[in-house]
Amino acid sequence: MNQRFVISLIGGLALAAALIAGVLAWRGGDRLQPTGQILKLRSTPIDGQHCLVVLDLRLTNSSNIALEIQQVSLSIEPKEGGVSQGSIVSGVDTKSLFTYYPVLGEAYNDPLIANTRIGPKQTLDFMLAARLDLPESGLAGRRHLSVIARDRSGISVELLEKSK
Image (tube, rainbow, N blue to C red):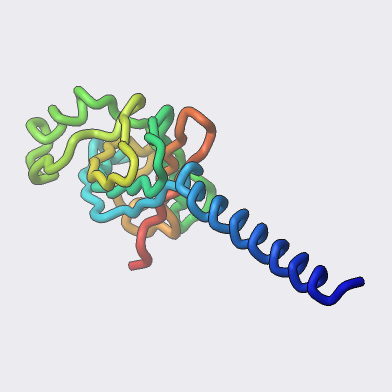
Protein backbone atom coordinates (compact mmCIF):
# COMPACT_ATOMS: atom_id res chain seq x y z
CA MET A 1 0.00 0.00 0.00
CA ASN A 2 0.94 3.54 -0.55
CA GLN A 3 2.29 5.25 2.61
CA ARG A 4 0.28 8.39 1.86
CA PHE A 5 -2.96 6.35 1.70
CA VAL A 6 -2.24 4.71 5.09
CA ILE A 7 -1.57 8.06 6.74
CA SER A 8 -4.77 9.51 5.25
CA LEU A 9 -6.78 6.48 6.41
CA ILE A 10 -5.45 6.72 9.98
CA GLY A 11 -6.09 10.46 10.06
CA GLY A 12 -9.65 9.96 8.78
CA LEU A 13 -10.39 7.29 11.39
CA ALA A 14 -9.02 9.51 14.17
CA LEU A 15 -11.17 12.41 12.98
CA ALA A 16 -14.27 10.17 12.85
CA ALA A 17 -13.57 8.87 16.37
CA ALA A 18 -13.15 12.42 17.69
CA LEU A 19 -16.41 13.47 16.02
CA ILE A 20 -18.33 10.53 17.52
CA ALA A 21 -16.86 11.20 20.99
CA GLY A 22 -17.84 14.88 20.71
CA VAL A 23 -21.44 14.04 19.79
CA LEU A 24 -21.74 11.57 22.66
CA ALA A 25 -20.32 14.07 25.15
CA TRP A 26 -22.65 16.79 23.89
CA ARG A 27 -25.72 14.51 24.21
CA GLY A 28 -24.75 13.32 27.72
CA GLY A 29 -27.21 15.69 29.40
CA ASP A 30 -30.18 13.89 27.87
CA ARG A 31 -30.02 11.18 30.52
CA LEU A 32 -31.66 11.73 33.92
CA GLN A 33 -29.18 11.37 36.77
CA PRO A 34 -30.77 13.27 39.66
CA THR A 35 -28.89 13.76 42.89
CA GLY A 36 -29.89 15.05 46.29
CA GLN A 37 -29.29 15.19 49.96
CA ILE A 38 -31.11 15.30 53.28
CA LEU A 39 -30.34 18.68 54.82
CA LYS A 40 -32.16 18.52 58.14
CA LEU A 41 -34.35 16.17 60.17
CA ARG A 42 -36.94 17.31 62.69
CA SER A 43 -39.14 14.98 64.71
CA THR A 44 -41.76 14.89 67.42
CA PRO A 45 -43.58 12.03 69.18
CA ILE A 46 -47.23 11.49 68.29
CA ASP A 47 -47.86 8.94 71.03
CA GLY A 48 -45.77 6.28 72.77
CA GLN A 49 -45.42 4.08 69.67
CA HIS A 50 -45.39 6.56 66.76
CA CYS A 51 -43.48 9.65 65.79
CA LEU A 52 -43.62 12.29 63.09
CA VAL A 53 -40.56 13.20 61.07
CA VAL A 54 -40.06 16.20 58.77
CA LEU A 55 -37.08 16.22 56.43
CA ASP A 56 -35.66 19.16 54.53
CA LEU A 57 -34.33 17.90 51.19
CA ARG A 58 -32.38 19.27 48.23
CA LEU A 59 -32.84 17.71 44.78
CA THR A 60 -30.69 18.53 41.75
CA ASN A 61 -31.57 17.75 38.13
CA SER A 62 -28.34 18.13 36.16
CA SER A 63 -29.79 16.83 32.89
CA ASN A 64 -31.31 18.68 29.94
CA ILE A 65 -34.77 17.19 30.50
CA ALA A 66 -37.31 17.73 33.27
CA LEU A 67 -37.56 15.43 36.26
CA GLU A 68 -41.17 14.63 37.22
CA ILE A 69 -41.56 12.92 40.59
CA GLN A 70 -44.11 10.11 40.52
CA GLN A 71 -43.54 8.46 43.88
CA VAL A 72 -41.70 9.19 47.13
CA SER A 73 -40.91 6.73 49.91
CA LEU A 74 -39.08 6.90 53.23
CA SER A 75 -37.50 4.01 55.11
CA ILE A 76 -35.60 3.77 58.35
CA GLU A 77 -33.54 1.01 59.90
CA PRO A 78 -33.73 1.27 63.69
CA LYS A 79 -30.86 0.09 65.89
CA GLU A 80 -32.92 -2.97 66.89
CA GLY A 81 -32.90 -4.16 63.25
CA GLY A 82 -35.57 -4.53 60.59
CA VAL A 83 -36.80 -1.80 58.30
CA SER A 84 -39.72 0.54 58.97
CA GLN A 85 -41.48 2.28 56.09
CA GLY A 86 -42.80 5.76 56.74
CA SER A 87 -46.33 6.78 55.81
CA ILE A 88 -45.86 9.92 53.71
CA VAL A 89 -48.08 12.84 54.73
CA SER A 90 -49.93 14.61 51.90
CA GLY A 91 -48.77 18.03 50.76
CA VAL A 92 -51.81 19.85 52.16
CA ASP A 93 -51.51 18.12 55.53
CA THR A 94 -47.75 18.74 55.67
CA LYS A 95 -48.31 22.49 55.78
CA SER A 96 -50.84 22.19 58.61
CA LEU A 97 -48.52 19.99 60.72
CA PHE A 98 -46.56 23.08 61.70
CA THR A 99 -49.71 24.57 63.25
CA TYR A 100 -50.49 21.42 65.26
CA TYR A 101 -46.88 20.68 66.23
CA PRO A 102 -45.10 24.02 66.80
CA VAL A 103 -42.05 22.14 68.14
CA LEU A 104 -41.23 21.35 64.48
CA GLY A 105 -40.36 24.99 63.85
CA GLU A 106 -41.09 26.72 60.56
CA ALA A 107 -42.01 25.29 57.17
CA TYR A 108 -39.23 26.61 54.96
CA ASN A 109 -39.98 24.78 51.70
CA ASP A 110 -42.82 23.35 49.65
CA PRO A 111 -43.67 19.67 50.23
CA LEU A 112 -42.24 17.04 47.88
CA ILE A 113 -45.30 15.36 46.39
CA ALA A 114 -46.25 13.35 43.31
CA ASN A 115 -46.21 15.41 40.08
CA THR A 116 -43.52 17.74 41.43
CA ARG A 117 -41.48 18.97 38.47
CA ILE A 118 -37.81 19.90 38.62
CA GLY A 119 -36.72 21.64 35.44
CA PRO A 120 -33.52 21.02 33.50
CA LYS A 121 -30.34 22.17 35.28
CA GLN A 122 -32.36 23.12 38.37
CA THR A 123 -31.82 22.58 42.10
CA LEU A 124 -34.79 22.91 44.47
CA ASP A 125 -35.36 22.47 48.20
CA PHE A 126 -38.38 20.59 49.54
CA MET A 127 -39.71 19.16 52.77
CA LEU A 128 -41.12 15.70 53.32
CA ALA A 129 -43.24 14.64 56.29
CA ALA A 130 -43.93 11.06 57.32
CA ARG A 131 -45.41 9.12 60.23
CA LEU A 132 -43.23 6.31 61.52
CA ASP A 133 -44.48 3.27 63.42
CA LEU A 134 -41.76 3.46 66.04
CA PRO A 135 -41.22 5.60 69.12
CA GLU A 136 -39.03 8.67 68.90
CA SER A 137 -36.31 6.81 70.82
CA GLY A 138 -36.18 4.32 67.92
CA LEU A 139 -35.74 7.20 65.51
CA ALA A 140 -32.96 8.69 67.62
CA GLY A 141 -31.02 5.41 67.60
CA ARG A 142 -31.37 4.73 63.88
CA ARG A 143 -28.71 3.07 61.76
CA HIS A 144 -29.94 4.27 58.41
CA LEU A 145 -32.55 6.64 56.96
CA SER A 146 -33.24 7.01 53.25
CA VAL A 147 -35.69 8.73 50.93
CA ILE A 148 -36.30 7.42 47.41
CA ALA A 149 -37.87 9.73 44.81
CA ARG A 150 -38.87 7.99 41.57
CA ASP A 151 -39.34 9.76 38.23
CA ARG A 152 -42.12 8.85 35.77
CA SER A 153 -39.53 7.14 33.56
CA GLY A 154 -38.50 4.81 36.40
CA ILE A 155 -35.25 6.63 37.22
CA SER A 156 -34.88 7.14 40.95
CA VAL A 157 -32.66 9.03 43.34
CA GLU A 158 -31.88 7.79 46.84
CA LEU A 159 -31.13 10.41 49.44
CA LEU A 160 -29.20 9.10 52.42
CA GLU A 161 -28.89 10.84 55.74
CA LYS A 162 -25.40 12.03 56.54
CA SER A 163 -23.69 10.02 59.25
CA LYS A 164 -24.11 11.43 62.72
